[in-house]
Image (cartoon, rainbow, N blue to C red; front, top):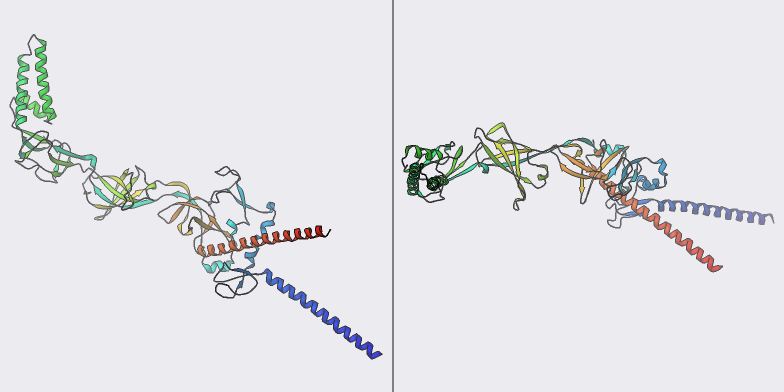
Length: 484
């Protein structure tokens, strides 16, 4: 009897021990399985692959690695009260680059929304260990407010000033009796004799003028007013004919004083300059309208420069221009922008700009090539950043803001022109004094895109779980109503 009781006790003890061990093992396995299910893993070669639990990448077959806890916990601040969060700036709901320091209305009339310190642009703020930041070689710069300008440099070609070109032509037919200016390139002065022309029509008109002059003197004492008026009208018409032929006033006065007809008429230079074209040859017969000389005044010259279409908005008429000559190093000539042509050269895809320079010593020769620099008007109090801080990715232009303690925020910005010293004009998206990343920002951009994808995936998972829970509750309620 005693042995039987002892055997029963031993069997019960073994059974209880087995039951306890199995329960403990089940709880432990459940916790481990839950831990594995709650941990996310990704592929080092394909960061877009995010799975729950360890395994292999379905694309390349590599072992998955666990994600950092900082990436998963990026959405934990969603439930934090707004009163405990710090507002960084106010943003337009329809334009993320339109930001303000204070609340108000956007350009579209919509209420501005706050952006808190624990938020990032599109949920893509990242945190990196300071040691890793140092190893990556991350450098920062400060957003500055200063006068922004740009000097536009281009190749220029010297040409004649078209406003100071004069044409000497004949209005009567005749023969060239004598040349005073007999070669191209000869400098002339205003009023200097160029040539003598013999014209039978001119001789006849001079004789008529002398006869009209004598006739007026003879009938000046006539008692008939109509006769006196007729003589004066004939004299005036003959004199007018000489004037229309560009006979100098001095030659007409000589004719009146001496009373002798001149065989030839002298053509004079209309301005100071240089003969750039000569068509007059001694003894040559010329017809009415024939071009004899072309004279250019080189006291001022034109310089034509070709600019790219993105440089044209910087240039306005009246701006200062400088020119340097290759054969005169150190010598700088100053001029101005005279005209911007209103059309584009279709072949070269550039716009021609005309500059005007004084040329007192005639050191500038038409046909020369020079280096010109246009001093554009500066933009006062402009927000500028280094050009290496800008990331252009298709339609978006972003810059990374260094927020301290290894935290970085990508922010979409809008930029303008680029200056000479490697600085870019910022039109919207940044404030003075902010710290921006100038190196290794492409690595930060990759990490930011990964964190943004993770956060979107977690949000979608949370939404799906919430919807599935609601569906289960609805099914249970429906079953209870059916059973009742």
